[in-house]
Image (tube, rainbow, N blue to C red):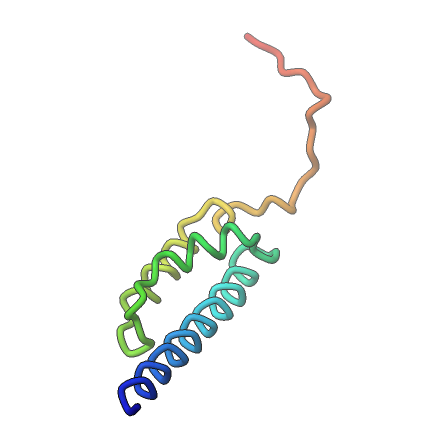
Length: 92
């Protein structure tokens, strides 16, 4: 009985940690990308976390943050400027 209770507590703890990780990814991603992340992007960043990670082991958090900050979506501001697909380029 005690083993089942302990196992249940560990599962709940993992789910809570994963929920906090997803929340943090969505929050940081929205700030960094200046738009909400897609579900696919959230899954990719959540994949950087191992199933046994905790916030005390910050390597996964640092890896996720660094990968967001080197992404082209962070480095280049796509909301500036206007698409100019109708213009032709002149070749010299």
